[in-house]
Amino acid sequence: MKKIVLVFVSVVILGSIFSSCTKEGGNGPVDMSLIVGKWLFSRSTVTSSGITLPYSNPNLKNEEGCSKDFIEILSGAVVKNGDYGLNCVFTEKTGTWLQSGNTININVTGTSFNDTFDVTTLSATELVLKINGTYSGQSGVLTLYFTR
Image (cartoon, rainbow, N blue to C red; front, side, top):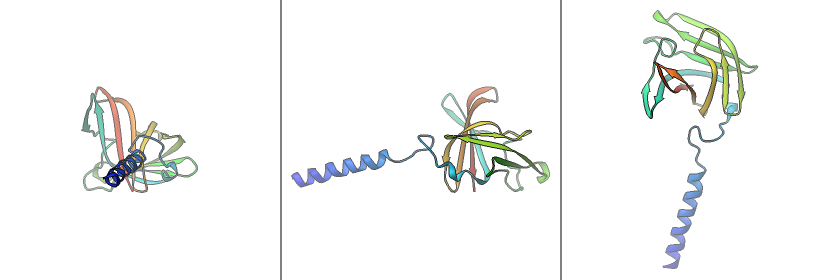
């Protein structure tokens, strides 16, 4: 009986150790060395008063039938914003970026990327940026999702 209790206690302790080391998006440092590269815009949401909804405006959406919009973060503090507009007309604008901790300041004149974003998720295949602001007249958090 003591062996069963000892095994059970060991499993509980090990389980709590491993679950406390699991990183959830936005809770702790992210590996910012993965930020450099081309990120394809996937979707955006806005959260206000505890409610999360899909969010879209002309600057934050992929045109149907076109390639995906993107941001390309390059070494040397250069960033490119690629946008496929109506009839898949492509526009690319270049700007700068600066990283500090888990935040990235992106400045591309004439685009929706002119502010400081929290990097809440960053892996080899996924980038999630969040920013507080006013969206459709409501205060909330805009979340931008990108993939490679």
